[in-house]
Length: 450
Image 1 (tube, rainbow, N blue to C red):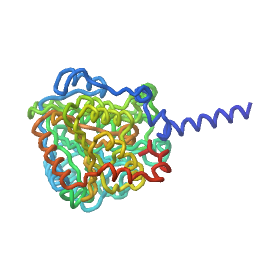
Image 2: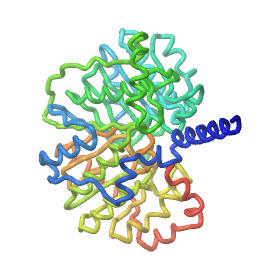
Image 3: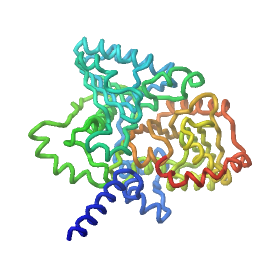
Image 4: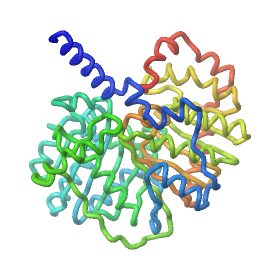
């Protein structure tokens, strides 16, 4: 009986580690996506981009809605992003909510933190959560800020039961000011991003004003409630566990008031830009990010332009890209020449020949570190945010994306994208064949973690 008990305990522990580490199909491939992958099926819309049917398909498969009446300002690179951020922090009146993968208290981080401390003195409430893996800073660097009344949470610190969540990181970059303005981007708060994209990492973001800020504030609240080591209000990193965890938590949350519930405002329209905010968490049974990209790419008739530092898409996104190329769509990929993650480079570059063989054009960026994350479909649809085209972003991390059909913003992004291609190196098919090495095979078991 004792041996049987030990065996059951051992099997339970193994299952727990697998389902929480992202190493198994239970976690790293969502059940719904696993089903589609097995049948080689990608999601498609019955309507073209811009039609009600296209939007309805995205509504259903990304669990999101389009919000009308916004303004959107494109902020390319740190040289434009950080000055605007400091300006808006200085103008804040009530509260500032920040969720960052990396908030490093270096020169840029200190400048932002000092402005936030000034906001505290004006009576502005400030919340910051940063990822324990992604950040070079620890909680002690925020000591003075906390003493001044700031609220800081470390996302998934490696202590207590959060150890079992270590493979699920908060990769979102969100800053909400007074509930009516919000920054979304790929930029972290760090010296790395300070510059024009050649000096400093190449990246971009947006400042959104209008009703869409309510959707962004709700995503921040999800990040905030998941941060730290408090068991109440935090979802288990097991696919499909959310409903059960909420039932268990409900009476305790009601008693102790553990969750942050944002005050959603009745925001009047500020412009004419329609924006869709798509978020995802590793507990969902379906990947909204894979759904978003496959639906958009499958709707392409003329062009698909993608910029991503880490290009190793899951099977369904890969299929959508190859199918688009087979239809005669002009598919272009801009990615890093020399990745800041050497292991990823070995895996990703060893697969580029597959895309080149099917007519997809690929450029390597070697002027700095490419960190820009975007997709432009037919010059009519834009996807930006924190999402890389890899399994980690699309299956394991907490992410957020913003989408728009606004032609002014898309033209700005398209012009900048084509300018980036002129500065990058286009790979030939022969070059990609030379990238196939023995290390590609050696590191292949780690592909799903990248």
